[in-house]
Amino acid sequence: MRNRTRRNSNLFVAVLGLLMLLLGCGREINRTVEHKIQDALPDLIGPARKYQVHINNPADRTLRGRLSDIVIDGSDVSITNGLLLDTFHVELKDVDYDTKRKKLNSIKEIRFTATVGEAGIDEFLAGEEPPDEKIRKVRVTFGEGNLVKIAAERETLGVGVPFTATGPLRLVSPTRMELDPTRLVVVGIPLEGVPLRFLKDRFESSIDLASLPVAATLTDVRTIRGKLLLSGSLNPAPFLQHSLDTRQ
Image 1 (cartoon, rainbow, N blue to C red):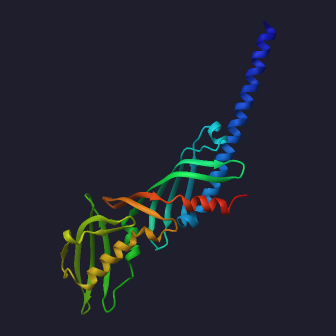
Image 2: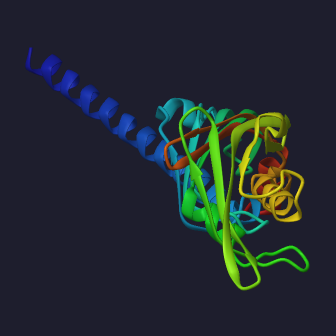
Image 3: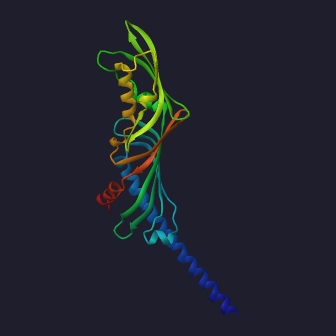
């Protein structure tokens, strides 16, 4: 009986040791992939105050290179056109990783959600004016129901004349949105005037995701109070190519 108990105890220790070894290897592979992706993100998306990459995956699947989902969270992300995204959340689905060559083989899809605050849009619009016009105190407000309000002053003979344009957002292409011109309410300035057309175009260009280094497709644009919310997908190819370029 003592021998059987001792054998069972030894077997338990051996299994536990193997399990700990597998878990340790799994975590190491996870960390390797996390670090490789994190290092690539400034080139793939843009500079950020902070990026976090997380893989939560069973050790046995990790050792087989099946990483399920990889989650990326970016804070204060600057995209190429100069707009600052408050947050950028990315999920890589069904990732296949070559544990020997240390490279990503395939990614089923990449989904993203991003938030843009009013301050970020205001900063993007600040300091830009159309030729022969003076525009100041530009402010953008996001409301419920996809409503956006642009308020500013047009300087005329040294006096600032306030005007506003309010309307809903709509998607017009896989990378671009616009203020619906058929439902735009304008106060204090001609609807077809240069200042309004300039600000409308500038605002719409701020969310042109064609400026991202990695191709993006918008599937939804909406607003809540104080925030613009974007969602869509990213092209997996640059993630795969970048991992090839940086493998060790």
